[in-house]
Length: 379
Length: 243
Image (cartoon, rainbow over all chains, first blue to last red; front, side, top):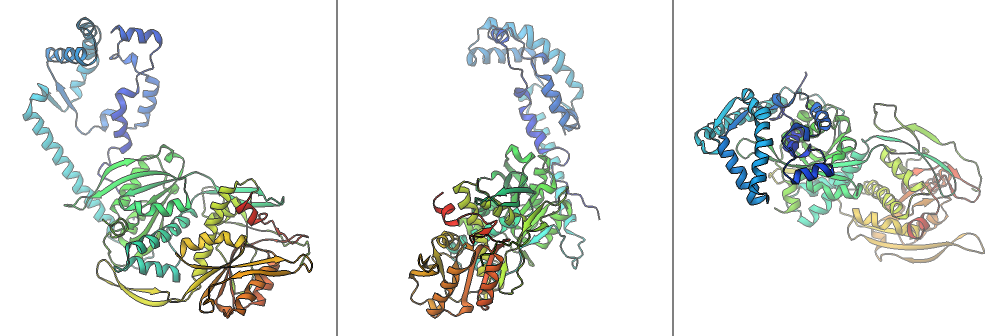
């Protein structure tokens, strides 16, 4: 069965959206001394495409496979009367940017207005909605808001359906795929499971034993990163043919619960670069939502450990891996480290991402609610 | 046991299959004795051993990487302690059929290198009691001699984790085991934790104490004329404490 998981932003890309936010400011060319003088005389044309570094822009745009227009779900053109525009501009430039009236008007007539007519105005024909009178037009704004809310709701419903579909149709007798690596059962592991599962365990003990098992999980995860041959010489001058990691190690912690695995991580890889994703389940729908992300730029080349102590529905894990793939991390560079995982969650994750390895401390036969972070952080 | 003969190095492709071939590295010499437990030769363990064998590894890294191996040794060693079944209640009010350990343990380090393993032991067993044994080579007889020991009073009631990172001929480890047995510790309650061993040393030790369990990370190729382990990693105590 071919399975496809598509997150709510399936037809956009997290990274692309971020990039759009930076678009305008990032691509101005560095001014040379002459241009800089011009700028101070209000004679440099910031609004002309010539002031934008097109080599970089084109290169980045090529990354955006579909092109900017097609990426936009809804195109809105906000039309404001030119007199109002000029008035606002004068107020801003004189009050906040220390320019004189003459300079501000000069820039308006020589650059801003002509460029608006040349480059911005024609975009009207690409717009789905034209909003006359800008911010004063509350009726139009309300209509747009309603439309967006409806679109988001539809996406959310479709996302939940995808998640449900991924959870269905498993052959319960079929063993988990070989990409799922469960820690080898042993008396000490059983002992640690017992202490972690026991509600009577003190928080002090809980943290001690969870850190201990976390270090074992990360050690096991490291076994599935890429290694290469390395020959060394001992102090006595003997040769030894060993191994070393082929890539640096980054970790991505899924907050908040992923934080419980960080002590284990630092015991094994103290210098791992750590990225963070805050994924929360919507209390109403149960749908996971990505609230925050801060990821190291080295993800594009590092081996990546994704940390979340518990997989229940698997929705948060699916979302995290999707974000990483949007960042250009291939599945075979990802090792997902978790302590307690439900079978449904593991099936969903491995069906959607067959190349991702999953290190599991214990497979949960039932459906234990999320409790690790609550116990670990005491809140 | 001072022969210079060496077993040939055992090479095996290890680790997960990558796009390319599996890299090949030297793995532990197998030992047929059932009381010798060699840690699984995973790529990560081999990488750690590569770091601590490398003469150019600086002391801070040497300490960090050997501590990681020692923790794995302790984790494996503790698995040889017996547990009894014990039911607990989970956060969702289910009953969980688990286990617990009811005995008492203590660590015994053979000074000085063995003391380097105490941190790893404490990482897994908080507030564990630790005894010490100092054995030195007697200048006159060239035989190991017991200089000092300080052990828990009730050591005969405890499981003993005997710590010594390097096992060459095993002279001091053998004497340490004899000290423990003389204090009433049954042989089957002694666990010997070791980083790197020589094949001939570990085999005769395993035969001499058949009920004692040995957990080691790696059995090397052999010993040189001066009874140093080949390829080994140099003097563990010096590299951990001084150099």
